[in-house]
Length: 159
Image (tube, rainbow, N blue to C red):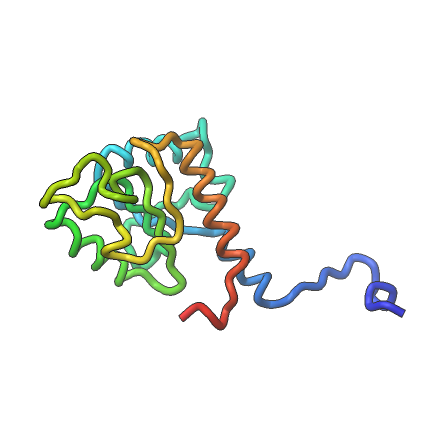
């Protein structure tokens, strides 16, 4: 006799880990932090046409202490790198990072002494979104990939 036959109808069973990961993936709070032209596309994503609210991310936070998602949107100059790192360090755990655009992913066309050649040299990046600048649809796809990654995390691995 299986477990399904002993449980009353309408009872939902899952593990605590899956429930926590589901709730974390559907309530990401990004910090308001735009660095360059990709931030314009990010603002478009927050509008009614693309409706980022359906992913639970409509509340952009002004304080990193209230956010759990850092979206590095655009190029990072060497002068701005310590600020990006400080914002990341001020965020509460668990926290995730999206590198939005070619500049945030690899330095883009700015291969010179003044631009950091990728956000992953400053903070750990979870999802890379290519494009110059990436369209809002690409950002939403990247957000869905981050949600998928969060749902597969193990609590014991998150420190």
